[in-house]
Structures are given as structure tokens and as C-alpha cells.
Length: 181
Image 1 (cartoon, rainbow, N blue to C red):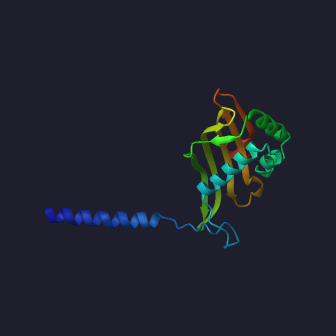
Image 2 (tube, one colour):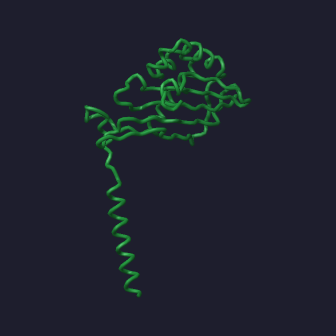
Image 3 (tube, one colour):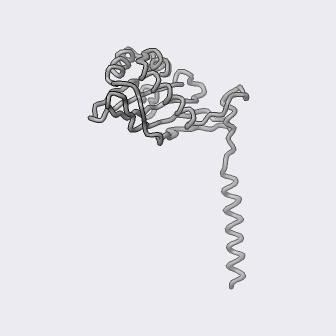
């Protein structure tokens, strides 16, 4: 009986090993398209880069810096400039600290033949404090990769909420991601 249990355990282990190794898809993040020499895409690293740009542009009231972070679809909307201006008026002061533990999630990721063809992220930044005594939360959505849809690359939406619950928004996630409406 003990021998049968051992054989059963070995058999189950072998089957599980084969199944799990067969299910893993090897992904070459170096290949985002035709150019095999492009850098590895990390949603967390890219999110940090975007965050630093947002912080810099808010600190310096850089209208065009913020505008250029958005994808072509959002940049073509009539209300974008007004939305940016309202955010710049709403955000009070320069950032002096923030919670380093931001949250970044991959909203969608598609892989075809080992190549990442779509990568859409959502990032939340909390406890952003300014020298004017204000505290904010910022969250944004962005496509890092979307092969065949270059007009979607960049921010699709940016939200800023202050400690009173008042909020401003730039862009529209659903404008860029019609299928999620």
C-alpha cells in the first residue's frame, strides 16, 4: 500500500511538472515589433518614468510637457487644452514628498509568437504632498505597447484628487479603449 502511494505521488508530480512547463510561454520582451534591438519594457520602470515626468511638469506648470505625454487620440480632442489648464490651476505648489509604494497593474497584455504586442498599465500614486500644505492622489492609464495602433501610445487618462475629494481629469480612457465601454 505504501509503495502504491509513493508511485501515485511520483506520477502526479511528473504529470504536474509536464503540464506546468508546457503552459509557460516564453516571452521575448526585446522584440516589440520588427526591431529586435529595442530595450526591455518593464511596466514598473516605465510607470516610474511617467510619474517623474508628471511630477516635473506639475512642479513647473509645463502645459506642453503634460500635453505631449498623451496619446494622439486624446491629443486630438477639443477639450484637452482646457482640461490641462484646469489641472494646472488645481494643483497647488511643488511636490515635496510622496508615498514611494505606488501601485502599477497591467490592465492588458497580449503576446503573439513570444512578442509583446499590447501592454496597457494603470498606476496609482498616493500621499503626494506639496510645499503649500496640500495632499493629492494621482492615477493614470497608458499604453506602452500597442502594435498596429500607434495612435494609442501614451497616456489615455490622468486623474488628480486633493485631500478634500475634489478631482480633475485629463483625457478619457474609454475614448482610447472603446471595447471597454
